[in-house]
Image (cartoon, rainbow, N blue to C red; front, side, top):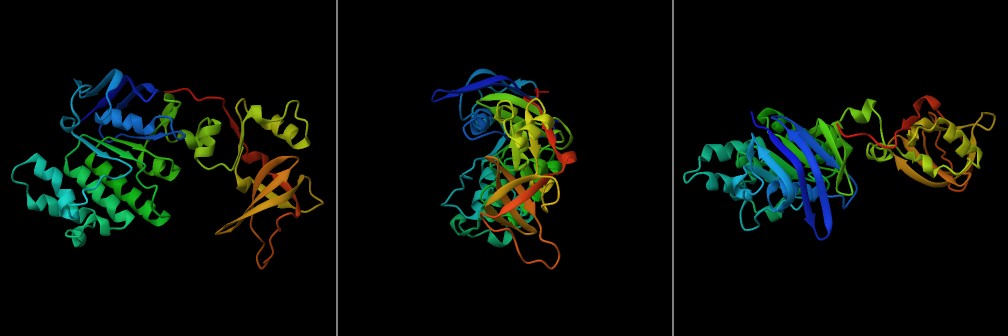
Length: 344
């Protein structure tokens, strides 16, 4: 059983300060690191990997201090966003490189098993420049696992892939990570990836820990505005964004239902109703097609509200841009927000 821990870990790069970060990872555990661009997600991975020197704190594996140990002696599998594949080596050459580093007589069967596991055997002799995005990702994962890592670090793993490839690869890596029991730290902007690969979230804000907790927090726990946006709520309104004294009928209605941090409403919870029903009148400003209808961006009393519209069976008409509509919100589906969620 392998355990990794970060204690008061801080790092400084070009005037930006990360930390302090406290985090523990045990065998099979996986943490998804999320946050806006520039908050220190990649800096954290590079510091754990030993590519950036920390300014304070410790990195330990099973109680051994690795803070000043060089990267090659940390037994890590680090997959950067660029993947950093060797262009002068074939697929087999890339995957086999860590095996060559581990022993003077690499076992060909071990290389074949890795290629088979990631459906790469038929590409073994192909240069990496002739691979698709998903194939390149599989090569990078196989190469990382060939190093027999005790921790896997992965930076924005699936951001360049189409939805089908992204889902397939997330399922593949999730299964491998669980089977091998290798702790994982993954940086992602995609909630689907976070849910598929991780059991905990680490939220960074301006280089500091804003929240550490289970991914289930996103489903049934308190949310901040950031977490609500992260999991896809289309209408997220902070309490301080509601107009002073709620000058409009819409803002007054929202303010009555908001939590201390505001409220979140999915587009699904906002529907179009006829003129005889209670609701808020607005004007369509933009239509965005979806597989099951359209999302409408509707201006209501100076505020933009996103509503999902599905035409009735047999109907072929949609509201046009500029046309008036009446919206109604399902109050039972409003999610009250907290101003912050404490780290745990």
